[in-house]
Image 1 (tube, one colour):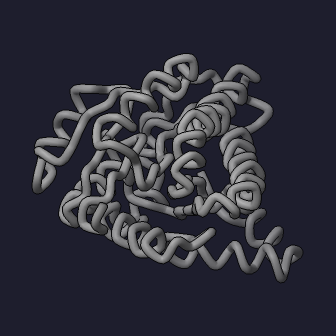
Image 2 (cartoon, one colour; image 1 turned 45 degrees about the vertical axis):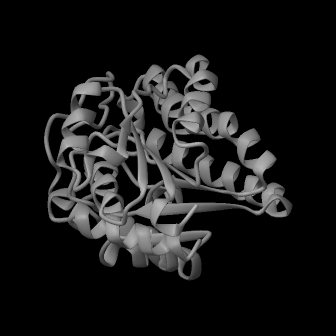
Length: 263
């Protein structure tokens, strides 16, 4: 299969980063499978792509892992294989830990972590048999450090790093690549749809997100990183420097975070 006709499966493709990735990859001539819960929104994304004939819609709900075996089989057979899966689907949070019901923490973990892991594990036997494949996971900068109002969300993203870093080492001999993508502030509806303490959506755009990197620019940076098969990379503005400040100057990082307006 030529580079121009790679088969790429993108989850969470109905909006934000996922939608931007679908439109950008379509321009490269790739065969796309786009997934999310809303078939109606996926159809809108398909129709907005430069070559909609190369885009197949496959509805997916990360909260329903019992459906993954059949979905993966269907996805694989659509184009006689898959070269790259981008696990982008997920949900965010904006609430203090003390105000957040444990059911909300559980939902964040079940969708962001367990759903992503279950889908990747369902696809894994196909990649291992072929001895080729690429698994990409969109985590977050808060998968590298914690942040107020995002306790459950940050925990779910940290968990992804633990799992997929370990998985990468297990798959080395099978020629399967694993990439972790850590976006910072991207101008999407992620904060609008974020869960609050009682599980209801926040419903408003936070200022930092509104001023974030445009999704189209984010998509281009992600594609560039994935083409280089980077194991881990950060996408965003000056907030990406926080990863290095946390690593080399943890005391300073804590002082900055304590003073930051992060909601």
